[in-house]
Length: 372
Image (cartoon, rainbow, N blue to C red; front, side, top):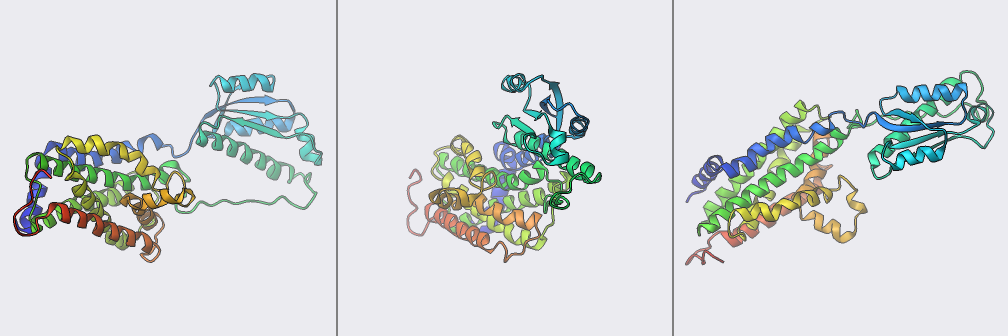
């Protein structure tokens, strides 16, 4: 079979097969709208806290009003003491406890030690804990800078230092804008990997998984083109629809997309050739999605992982894909900026395509046995 005929036949198989069509194309559309939906608010809001106000001063009441005016937290109860508030926290009735200690106003006005604000949070929810702490810090800073400094009551050491934070690349500082650009790479990889492996598993169950050289190249190119279409759909359309912060290097993205798609397609065809039927692909490869995401370095910095884990992660196309496409799509990086990732994707494409070539393609003479 010629290259062009194999290319067209593979696309025809994908479009005619309910399994392949739903796995490789329809699933991408579903994930594109389903995955960002839980994070539509971008930041955690209205987190319940219990308040303990021992100071009971005009300043503490001002602090409480400012705290309740934020979107981050909502005061669900006022406890007479710390023990009662912590009991509510342990019972799951609140995510945090805010204590305004006795003497806070005097401390802020005179600099006397011995008072302050204490915050206890449920650290089993890291995002909730950090949000509550940031909200209290911002309210206290506002009171210290805007209220007391204006009245001339903070004089020691000069005026307070003003810290201005300006988030780059994700100006809303939202969770969706942070996580979805990276998850999109994993979606591209997993849908294409499942589809290619399912295709090869089905051919092996029929005893026709061996291919001529041109047929293999055409099949590989066809699956790579599916990945290219998926990338363009996500990066060009869904990011716009979902309001994902972006500053694209379009030329760089178009250059890198075939490298990622070819690497994943080669990996899928090679792995699929070991499955005795199509169903094996989803059963065996399905549980890899979460580990592949964590190994991408999005949830935890890759360079902070053990060395052997870093090396293992580099064998997964989505790892380099995240470090290539997030800068290209969100940070307007140049190809030189992401050159190491591009080199790894190119190497993985040659490696996995070559492994598939060696195992699947017939190399002259009598064809190998079909059940190897």
